[in-house]
Amino acid sequence: MSYEAVVPIGMRCYTEIFLKKMGYKKYSCPFDAIFSNSIDDIIYLFENKIEYDKLIHTENIRNNTISQLNKQYGLRTIHTQLNYYNENDYFNTYHLATFAHHNLNDEKVKQHFERCFNRLEIIKERKIKTLFCLFNHTILNERLTLEKINKIKTYLCNHYNCHLLVIEFITYNDSAKYNIVYKDNLLTYIYINNNSIEYENQKDVLKYIFDNFVKINPNELLTYEQMT
Image (cartoon, rainbow, N blue to C red; front, side, top):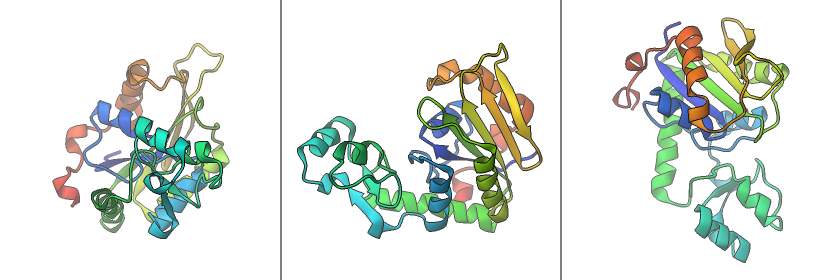
């Protein structure tokens, strides 16, 4: 397969972090640091984008717990349709914020995300051959099912010229370092037999998978300048 773009779509920031360390990140995309708790969350954001009227900014919450968390971890943006508990559950409301590392009350951050979502429109309109990557660490999120994965695969392939790579990091009783769960012309679904969130613990098997199954040359991917 010949790809022009590699785009992370969650479930957390580790997909983007790993792809960047491997040399596949050429520009920012909207899901780089978004916390998605489910496949439905991802599809919702593809469909609806930011929805400023449904955002709560932690810098505006007058609560001692939130103020301390803001100082310790930084300002966050909560989406009331996604991972939102309620205004009285401040701890979960903060830690499950959809935009976990961004304050969309800041105009520069808003413009950053608008550019990111615009890149998805460019990819769609130009029918750019894209590898969407979804990495799931099962110590942080629930395990996925093939039914859920097929749901996001169907959505993406109905809108983009793409292939979906799903990797779940999960420790299981087997000597193999990885296992190909499912593969066809639209989807590659792989278990890696290690649930560590540290890139150094995953880099060798990831390199093997990308070299032997994905086969992307980072130098052939579209650049930042070509995606604006």
